Image (cartoon, rainbow, N blue to C red; front, side):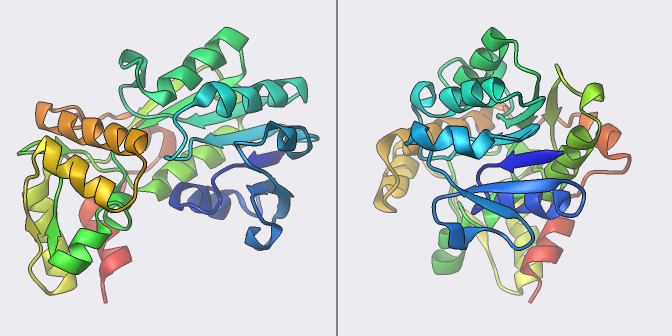
Length: 277
């Protein structure tokens, strides 16, 4: 199967490319062709320029669709790409949504899910919880500069999921789409931990103390804005993290190990793989 992969310069897209490379023909949607991952075909693409969509999807049977965090208006970006893919004859669309999108219509991901349903698209919706890779990017600056994790989660617990496990699921669904089309999978890690526990795990791996400092709602929003995040993106991140204190991501779901055929990766193993000096 030839699969168009979006988001290949980010953490999720890179892991999907690594999982599918050698198993399927990969066409990577990139803004500049020099960003094309090795062993794949590159195509010039921009979510903000719909004229790039037809060439990107032409000849593809699969589409891996990931919403860039900076894009909130899916009606003029992701949804038209879905339309172009369907017109081109794509047989399966794997869309990475978020846990709870089905009950939170204000989320951009929810708008994409609704569009897939309206179009009767041959889609598989993946609803992962919070990614362990947040410690590599979203939380990394505070860890490096201030030796702290700073989020408005209070004592909320999170069943962090490793993106590599999600990428492995993508390999399975593109390899046997008939088993998965029409499904919506909630995906979580194998255990729920709070940020104090996560900080202790990270401290052990890094060999220095990392503390958890609970943020206020306004304090976290201001901190995100100070890093240069657009207001819409900062608001989404703030609300999602605020929901953690109410248990929005603490449930451990059995779907991921069932799809993988083996246990999901625990946060401690992820820390050892990524952060161990």
